[in-house]
Image (cartoon, rainbow, N blue to C red; front, side, top):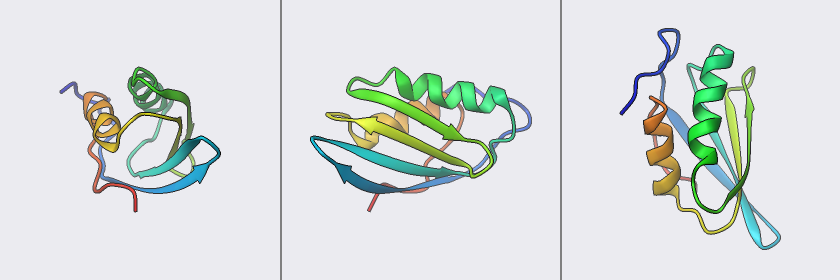
Length: 91
């Protein structure tokens, strides 16, 4: 697992909202404080097969992932690769 920038650490939780043929999952991530955090998290999640969009709201600490065919475990692995941990899976 890579290490996040020195200003970042935190736990995450998520909720899910189904939209059309795909889904949008909104993950709450605490500890993101800079553009490097946003870039790291969105870059790793964007590599997951089936992900068609990643939006990070730094102020809210929210990561919105959209697409179809990806699993929560794949998102978890991507977030861990960026140096973060998910606290749970979407409801």
